[in-house]
Every structure is written in C-alpha cells, then in structure tokens.
Length: 531
Image (cartoon, rainbow, N blue to C red):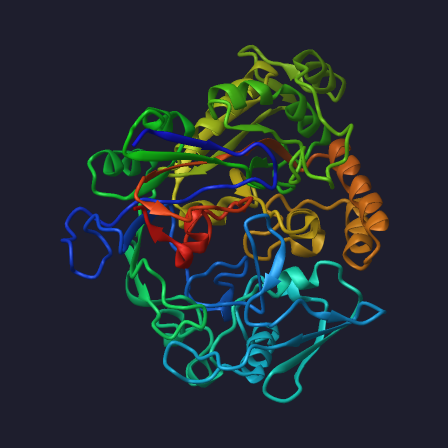
C-alpha cells in the first residue's frame, strides 16, 4: 500500500477522526478493543464526557454510538431518518412537527422502543429539576405528545427554523432511566440505548469500552469492539500512536505532518466549525473597556496564527461562523492593523508606561489568559495572542490549568476557548452571545451583553424565513465587530492519523467536540475490514 492523504476542500467535504488508544497496560483481549485486528478499534480523545445520559446533554449533536435520535446527519450534514421513518411533517405555521417512528426497534436490553420513550426524553430534559445545561436549546418546545406507539407530535411556542436539527438528540429508555435519579442515578454511567454499540466499562479518566449491539436495528457492526481512551496531552497521544499502542489519533497539525508519508497510516484533514477565541470578561476592568477589545481585535495577526500554529490547517476567524459559511457576514473581516490598535488605545486614555505596558487612571493594561493543561493548540494560540497583544502595549499573562481550576476564575480572567457547531447558526451564535446565556454552564463566558445582538438573535431564532434570518445574523456579526466581547482567532481543521486497514471511512463537517461522536468513526457501524 502507499500512503494516502485525504484533504477536504469545501465546508461540506469529508472530515476525519479522533483517534488514540487505550492505556499501554491494557492487554489485547481484555475487552478494551486493542490488539490490532480489524474487528476492533482503539481511539483516543482529549477529554471524556461528564455523563453518558442524553437526559443531561450527552450526544446532543448526534453520533453518540449508544443511542439514536429521531433524525441523524449524513456525511454532508444533511438530515436523514434514524428512529423516525422519514423527515418530519411540518405544519404551515411552522409550529407542529410530526414524526412517524420505526417499528420493531428495540433497546440493547431487548425492550421495545416506542413513542413514550421520545416523550419521556424530551419532557425530562425540559423538567426544571433536570440538571441539563443545554435545555435552553429546546426552549421552543411547548409540548411533546405520543399518538399511539409509533407517532410523536411536537408543538412549538414559536416557529423555530432549526428545530428539526435539534431532533438528532438521543432517545433514552424510559423503562430504565425513570427508575433512577435523573441527575445522579446509574443511567449516567450505565446507559441503555438503541444505538449500534453498548457500553461495557468506563474507567473514569482512563477509557470507555464498547461492544457491538447484536440487536441493532441497522444490523450488527463489523467492528465488534470499540475503545475510547482519554488522553488529554497532545504530545502523549502522538507518542502513543508512534509506539503502535493506538490505532489512531487526533493531533495538532505539526505533529500529524510526520505521518503523511507513512505507508501504514492515513492522514485526514477535516473542515470544521471549530474555532478558538479569547474571552474578554465584562467583569474585568481592563477587558470590559471597548477600546481594549477593539485594539486586541486589530493587534492579533490571524494569518500568522494559521501559518505558524496551525501549519496552514485552518483559516482566520472573525466570529463563531466560519468565513466560508453561507451565513457569514461579508465585510466583517478585521485586518491586522497594529498602528490602528495603538491609536485606539491612546485615544481612549491608555498611555504607554515605562515598561511599554499601557496605563489608564493608574491601572495597567494587563490580564490573565488561561488555557487547559495539555492542550498544545490552545497553548500555542494563547502564547501567540499574548505576543501580539504586548506589541500594542497590553500585558497578557498566560497560565495553564484544569477545567476545575479555570472555570471559577472566568468572571475576571480570560480563557482560550473552543466551540463550534455546523448544523445551524443559532447553535453557535445564541449560546455564545445572547445575554440570557450568561452564567449558564460554559455559555457566554465573556458575560457579553449587547442590545442589538440580543434583539437580532431573537429575531433569527423565531423566524423560518431564510432572508429574515440572514439579515438578522448579518446585524449580529456587524454589532460584534464594533463591540467584540471575544477575540476570535482561528477556525481549525481537525487533523487525524489512523491505521490503514478499514473501508468506509468518511466523516462530516465537524463540530468543536471531536470525541466519541465525531471523526471517521461517526459511521463506525458501517466500516468493513480492508481486503
């Protein structure tokens, strides 16, 4: 065989995989999926899910492996039926969605799947007692009702254009999940679903192991064992891949480059909606200053970031939406203009001090920027950002920490964040920018509040007219350019390396989350051994 490098050219092209394997101490045949055969796959991810219950948000973007949604996405991110037999029937007013369900589908424990499971899933998520930080994504739902065993009808409070995209959400087993506490019960770690795989073990902080579901309605998968190892450190994943301990890995572009000529590996570069940005918290007296925000927006050299940090595997970012998205507002690109950045600061009263760092009313233009430990891409972004900021006279102190350490500090300190969902602009813009999302989990970390942005996000969310939505999102992005509560840096391509021994590897335009559901194994159940 010869080495193959697959590179996607458009936003709807094929993407890639998050791979990296089980711990070195695991022996082949212990159920972890390792061993090098074509009936098993060992992959690695940078972080593990907090829960495996869809009632608490697991798998809401689809491809969860354990579960199915009413709908799913194909390789080009087009919606197609899953537990539903066809796409929903939508009423003329856009407020009623009717789904016809597959007959004969069972959960992995053999119990039948019915409309009551769908109703239970959505009603439980929307229950105020359920600790699902994503329940706001279903804000439009007024009611969900079963009509017999194989039909479900959703009634919406308002016409929500993206609602069908929300129904890729996994469906839980009412019979099993309702027996335990939704927030703390065993369903969070021992789930039962209708999906192609079943969880066999979960060693927190180490790995998750799965086996093929023999009752899967789509047919038992050829890859019988699937292991997801949790390896936060990029360099460690690269080392484990190089040693042969892993079947594949997601790697920073500069680490993946070494494998492009490897005859036993395939390298994928996937287009994504995944961005990196710096939060500029409104609770910090420096970063809340609009002049500082605008100056940082101009001081950062995004083109240089793409070349040096991403090795060309990405593009500059000026907001949550990629520049090649049909929803991106042309003309909102911000140039690298250090002279203009310095002028804005000077006009706002930020004068250079003796050490070159600007001062206003006795306060230095300085703040702390956190990134997650072991994440080389975030680290490199943070260091480059700090270097650019210093040229403008702003001192950015870069620090690493765990999620538990970083999260409580974000009312005052900045963070090198990542996010991005390709399905609909509402999925990115609303949780990141709408003031109602402040304090809601990891949403709106900058505590950003702009009246124009709020108003137009509401207009876009409540309309089914593409022109109305496009106009509203244009206004959102132009307001964001004038008052940037974040410094958006890059949209990154996901680069993966995987052993060349399977057929059927395709992927979608990927979200920020490149864990169990993203990457070439988004359709793992369809893979076949390479002959």
